[in-house]
Image 1 (tube, helix red, strand yellow):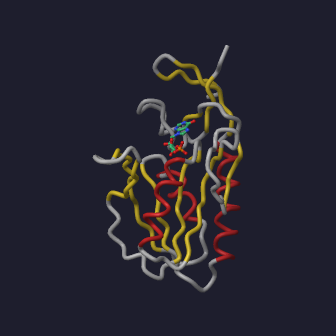
Image 2 (cartoon, helix red, strand yellow):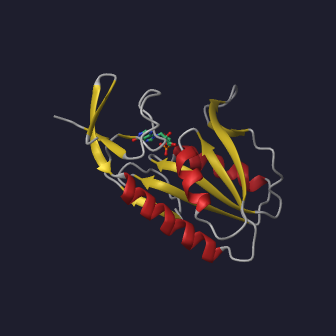
Length: 179
Ligand code: IMP
């Protein structure tokens, strides 16, 4: 399928399944080499990363631990700041090598706000692996240690990413058609 329609919007294929699979495999090989002899903890950020995680871990040649979290952002009662906490984080991070798995880094707000909370648990190291990055949209200095694809600042769906709950199941990534 080169075009899909979701709700009121039209999308066209941007990264096909083969291209994605090949890149995900390359990332897995790179991560396996970097973490050889260790047992990193992959923290997969739901919902968007479920396919990326499933494909990536199947290409690893190391023995990982894999856990899934959801990030919730809320406003503090007494301050104007926003806080991001992890729901479902049931692994002790002390002394662990953590690799965060994200579907996409857009503004970077989510990860930028969450990283300090993660650091409080004193992991040995934290790295970020993201399938997609929109550099034009990112507003924070984040080091993306493992990056699948840099993409333009356009809305995308598929391969875990959704538009209002639609489109996560596709094995390709589609970009919004703007006429
Ligand atoms: P950030 O905090 O702005 O970096 O956004 C992170 C989250 O926003 C991602 O994990 C996605 O769930 C969602 N998001 C950002 N851009 C897109 C997109 O183009 N399509 C679908 N979801 C997106």
